[in-house]
Length: 160
Image 1 (cartoon, rainbow, N blue to C red):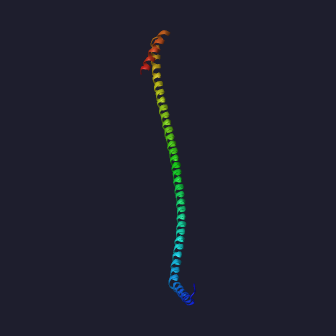
Image 2 (cartoon, helix red, strand yellow):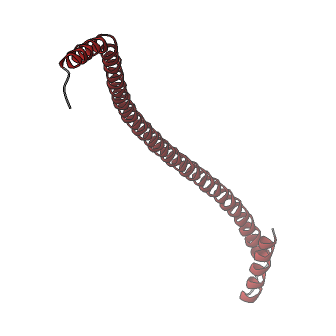
Image 3 (tube, rainbow, N blue to C red):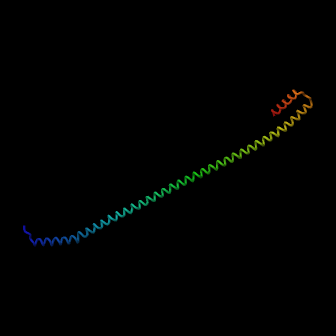
């Protein structure tokens, strides 16, 4: 097979012209579009990474806010427990004071009534003693009659 130099040179020139045209009008814009696509994908990756970091920060902030809310709730519960305990102690103390006051009043009333009863009994015993003495003086009685008389007056006192 024989090589035709003319055809070879024409084909070479046509190839170089085609290569120049492709490079200028096809490969240039195509590579530019591919470079833009590459930049777009890189921007999307960076944007996704930034969004992920922001989401992690927000998640951490939410965890901290939740921890603070739990702590505040625990503090509120503890404060309520202390308040209720203090109120219960105050109520118990007030009830004890009232009980002691009522007890003291009752003891005073009992003592007063006892003193009145003793005074009434003394008055009554004094009157009975005078009656017994007058009866004894009226009639001289022996010891047996005197016992009967005392028993009779004691029965009278007991029935009153």
